[in-house]
Length: 584
Image (cartoon, rainbow, N blue to C red):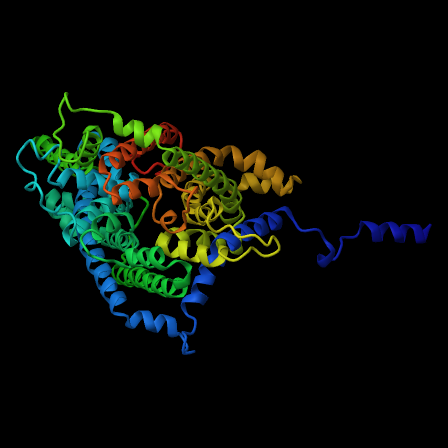
């Protein structure tokens, strides 16, 4: 009996740690790590190794040093810094001023104002550039009837540094706006009310209290705008290549397009230079923000909007005039150009035609295939990102696992660096046959999909993380104490709360990936075209009316998705949908 009791006790004793099966959290963490390791860390690591390799002479860091000393690379680097800095200044002026007016005053229709400002960012960069080309060019369907267009036969003035700066500055102004608006909402009301009680007018209180406290947010937004500008491909490609103004992103494209995979080492080194510039910008932002950081009490309510009184109508009119000019007129010109029978023909009821839509949207086999490919890529990316974002956010936010928080940072990296850099890394990894499988996914949709898996992961992760931060952690802890395993808790407690945010993130991914160009421009092949590539190719070949028709069709799809996201966003917390104003 005593021996039997001893054996029973041994059976009931807990197993040593090395013999226990892995917990549900560990399994989830490993699966997420495998996903990010394959699609993010592997390409970026491979790029780093290739770009820092020895040159033909065997010199350490030879490839990077050769490209750094190259005349063409130096010129493209200077152009990138010049255009990026000037475009950032435009973004600061436009986005910062709009943020102060929307957040600090009692202007009406704040959600509509915000959406109008974000519209150039929601529309892909190549379509934004194409819309501005149609608006400013000698054949502009809007400026030409008014006698304000350039003389016929002259070069479009946008094919220059000034055009690139203008379009990129307008496109990235939304990044500055969102950052500054968030910073203004964090400023406590008590500080401003104390200044008002002391007799300070609204303008004085804004300049002496609000502006200094908002400077870190303004710098953060400026850094995002700068990094986005130097990594932009659509605008420099459509405006810079015709204007012979080469930036690093277009230099990489032209090298690969001209010489193919034989120059992968060189373009990897150029991509590393681009990464170094982006990292330098972010580090500078962090250093400046740290020196300007001021601690304030966050317990009080948000700032109350300053009443504009009789000036409200003139201020609102000025805001809408600017937004119509930078957001709606280019798209109106794009729409009008899509109805003209040929370049240079005036649009009228007699000349209006739908032939370009029949050709570009319906009759062109390449376009039909591109629509199908883009739907497939965007949908698969949205689904995969949502499936990974929920468990990763759960482990990082609810379980507070250090490894999960590290993976959270890894997931942000591909979206923070230029898309061209990620595309080069994908080529380096997926050009050779895959290990074990022995097949190459180069020149197929798979390589674009794998790059999208890394590129857009954060767009699903951020809304889900914001949603889970509203859950009381005690709910998950109580379920765990009651014996519910990780997968049971994930499906019964976490998923019902995170699902709307995951769907919203998926829609954001679909909107972005559906018309993406920066990554796919380097990865597409015959039969694996995307809509962004086809629009770019039509414009590059000189068929601008067909490009305008196809671009208009994709903008309509984007706006429909934005409407669905807006409806869904009414049930989501915080700023999951960026144009919805929680304080309105």
